[in-house]
Length: 275
Length: 288
Image (cartoon, each protein chain N blue to C red):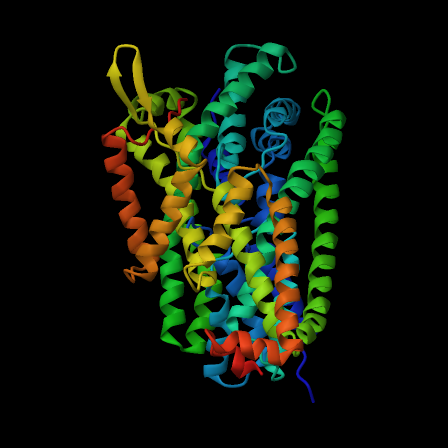
């Protein structure tokens, strides 16, 4: 008899995700631990031996970050995929993580623009109108409308993802699988490239004066070579340190702190903020 | 009139729940309790003046109506804006004897909120950095390979340990600043100036760190040097052509479709694939 994830375990994964997606946030592993905590009851139920459980959960050690509310769908999807894998479908870690990486960028864009950038401002706009003169009806309206809409919205996204996971497997392990997988990883790689240009913002403040009225603004020069060049340089540098120099992410981060301090001292970096 | 110890403790507790990586979760914490309008109601309830609370909350809310925090880059910290900014604004409005619904009052509230919001980004980085320690505990459990330990540790790491980060970076600062009142804000501005080395380095590190996260992703997908070209195309779409992530993803899907068709043809016509693959690729033959 094929294994299925019980309704209880699915519900537990859903609740753990919608509560804990960002509770243990760090800049290095943004939503990774929320994901691990959500997948834990599912993995625990699907596999019998300790070794299988540890191996399956280790798939989700990979960095994850998206707009967490719309991202509920990805969690539902991987619950479906994990169920298929437990039934012997040959899904490897790269496929599952390729799907996650390919979805998180576009879903973040969608979620940020639709939920955070459009839905919330609309609700708040109505609520502000209701709260004229300090009327508590305004904030109460927002609390109820937002939470009810999001709870059912996220439940829908999770269930849709779960059902999709089961049917997506057919395509992922069938004869066309190699073609599909390389295409999915391709989408993932391109989206990660866009993420590197969108979510990272590294600029230099260095200005080299030549004479009284001429100076070299390094950032302008870099922009004319290639826009956001420093983002690319730093991502590549971190990747190089981790793959070729076998450094752990924590050591790389320590190195970045040193680079930041030296950069600030020589005037290369200056966030230029003020109160 | 100041804020009592009990009131400050309640404000501190809500600050823990409402932060961006907050203990109330994303939907209920950050996007409900962290919105200044909702915070206005809560601060009003705590300080015993709901009406002023909501009026002040509403004028600060206008500034942050579309506060989007893509990829964890934070320009203003909601816990500070809402649970430090609103109480201080209420105090200041009372101290200066302003009418809460006047324009002067809402201007004062908005600028105070923005000031503590910028200040509060330090709290955001503090919380996120200390969480690295808890995540370290989680990785250690995962590496150990003992399921019972993992099953106990992961929920602790995600749901319980971050409370310690919040006691240090949400609770204590909120309680201290609210009790000290508005003079505290000026004091911190003087002792930790934005153009000082400490603050500059802190914000620079904040801008460099996301590169590590993206590099970890690259480690996953970049298998051969030519994959950097694929990465570079995505980078170019966003950096040079100004595509947002949805547009980039759509273009990526288009190229992936072409790639899929090509790969599909290889599978459908084994002879061509074999002829093509024989010269450089061993893996393809295994598939056939």
